[in-house]
Image 1 (spheres, rainbow, N blue to C red):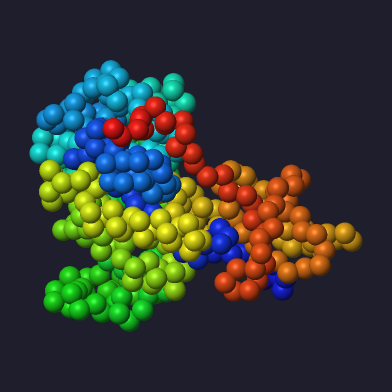
Image 2 (cartoon, rainbow, N blue to C red; image 1 turned 60 degrees about the vertical axis):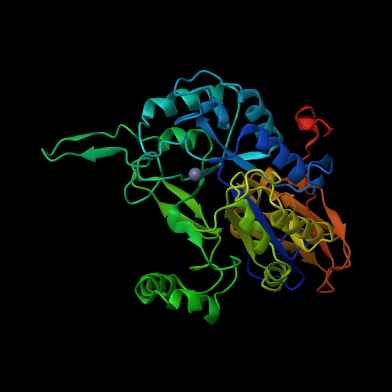
Length: 425
Ligand SMILES: [Zn+2]
C-alpha cells in the first residue's frame, strides 16, 4: 500500500463488511440433479425442497472430462474421455458465464486408474477458448494417480520435462500448466494448503500454534511449526490467504488456503464450520475463510440434498451477509478482490477543488469492485485509474465511526440461470 495519508486509508473489505467467507466445494459425488437443487438453495431465494433459498454468491467446481465410472452422474463438460460435449455442457457454460461455476477441479477424476494425458488439456482448453470461457481457479483432486495435479510432490501437471535414467530429457506426457494458464488459471489449491487455522489474513495466536489436537501428534506438529514460524506469524506470513508459489516449469501461481479437514469433508460438516461462534470470531479477527467441503457428499443419501445442520449454518451465514457483517462471494471473486487489495498502490493529492486518489495503472478496473477507502475530507473526492475517473459511492460511517467511499460492487445475478431453477412442485 502507499505511504499512509492522514486522510485516506484502504478498508480491508468492501463496505460495510468486516470479514469475508466462501465455500469452495469439490465436485466429487455431486450428481447434476443434486447440483441444481444445491445451487437453487445457495444462489436464489426461490422456494426449494429445503425451504426458501439463501440467495448467496457461492460458486462451485466441475470437471472437464467424465473420467471414471458412471460418467452420466458426473458434472463434466465432455461426455467421457473424448472431447465431445456431454449432456451438461450447456449448463456448465451458463453457470460459468453467470459466475457461479468458477473452479476447475482438475480435468477429470483419474483416481485408481490414472490416464490423464496432455492431449486432453489441448482439446479441452481449445474448446473452452472457442466458447470464450475463462477460469482462474484450479483445485487439485484425489489420489496420486492424478498426475495432472499441480505442484504436489508426486504430480506432473507443472513439470514440463522429465529427465530419464539414460540422461535424456523428454516432454512430460501429463504436463498442462502452460495450457491451463492460457485458460486463465492463476490461483491453485494443493493438499498442503488445507489449514486448520480458522480465518486467514490475520496474525496467528498462541492457540493456533499449539492447538490441543495437534499436540497429540507432536512429530507432525513440529514438522508444521518450523516452516510456520519461519514464514512469520503475521497476516501476510504463514497465515496469508494467498501466497505466490514457484512451479516446476519456471512459472508461478498464487496458492490459496482452504479451511477444514480431510476427515470432515462432507456437507454435514458445514454446520459446525458455520457456527455462530465461528462467524463471530471471523468478524472479530477481520479475517477471510474459504471452506473446504464436498457439497454433494453427505452421511444420509436419502435425507435432504443439503443436510439440515448445513442448512442451518448457511442460514446463519446468510444473516451475517444480509446485515453487512460478512462479505460472501465466489472463490474466484474473493481471491481476485484480496489480491487486488493487497497489491493496490495509490497516491493521494490535494487539488484546488478535490482530493484525488490515483491508483497506479496496470490494475484491471473490473478487479477493483467493492474497493473501499476511508476518507474524511471537506473537499469532494475523486478516484482515478490513470486518466480515467472511476465512479464512487459514498458510504455513511461504519462500525468504526468513519465514513468511506467505494467503487460500487456489481453483484452476481442468478437470473440468467432461471430456466435451471424452475419452481419446486
Ligand atoms: Zn476431488
